[in-house]
Image (cartoon, rainbow, N blue to C red):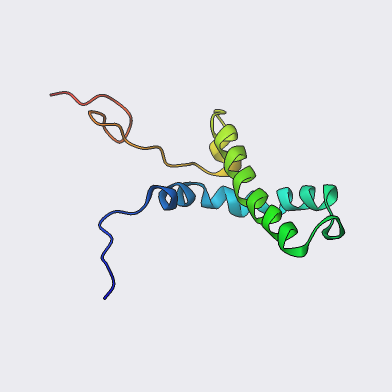
Length: 96
């Protein structure tokens, strides 16, 4: 039988948060990588692995950095921010 997962793993939540930015930026990043490395420089599996890692991790970093800019949400989409205890969804402190 399948074990029921009570909570979504943190790494899946993080990927979900940045998924739109990954979608938008991965072709750009992979093009840059392919201009620096060629499949002739290494095995095909190593090249694929580098392209995959770069195509996911670099866009996450770029989205994180661009989202710090006041207009970043218009460039890479708004990313969800975790709600801290004692704060409303708008980030304002709750009044008791």
